[in-house]
Amino acid sequence: MLPDKTQHKSTTTAKFRKDLMALAEGLDKPTYLEVGYDVGYTLMAVSKAFHKCVGLDNNPERFKDATNLQKSIGDDAKNVMLILGTLEALQSGPYEVVFVDADHRYECVKRDWELVLEKNTASRYVVVFHDYGLVQSGIKRFIQETFDREQVSFLGEEKDWNPLGDPTNDWEAVMVELTAVAGDTDG
Image (cartoon, rainbow, N blue to C red; front, side, top):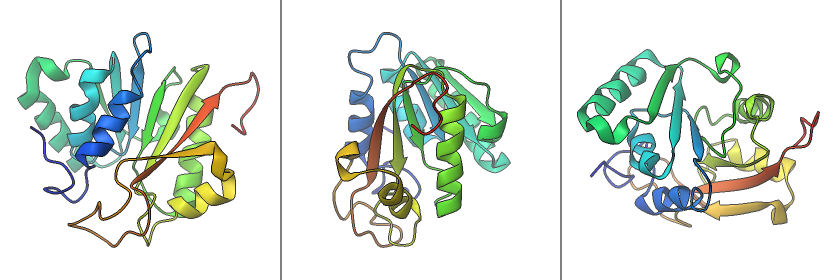
């Protein structure tokens, strides 16, 4: 079993992983994109629920760690493609579930959102932002300024979900469901 948030600071809780995998239920050959995979624990843990998984991270050390983890898992991670790079360099494609867990500063969260909208060709998809409730992150501000409350759903743990890291004051993650409209880049 791969470490969760109780064992490794920069991954996700077991409940969040279950919530993320549940998003694939009922989809035909769902594709998953994870932006900011760290060492790959969440990516590898949820990969079994998806037909194809793409992990994107811009840190060479994390890419090396995730590659080693993928090799150690073997065939159970054969549907995972790891990419060293940024969203700007990602080829456009359909991703039914997008998980963003990269730079948590407001301006970076906003840019990731804009690039996901630009790069994703799926007609219906969800975007999940992790670490919504981190006190020092810009994620909550971005979400509150961009969406009405009824447009978002919460995933993972509601409180006390970051025992090894920074303080939290709200949910672990937030999700937005989208239906693409030709030419629309506002979501």
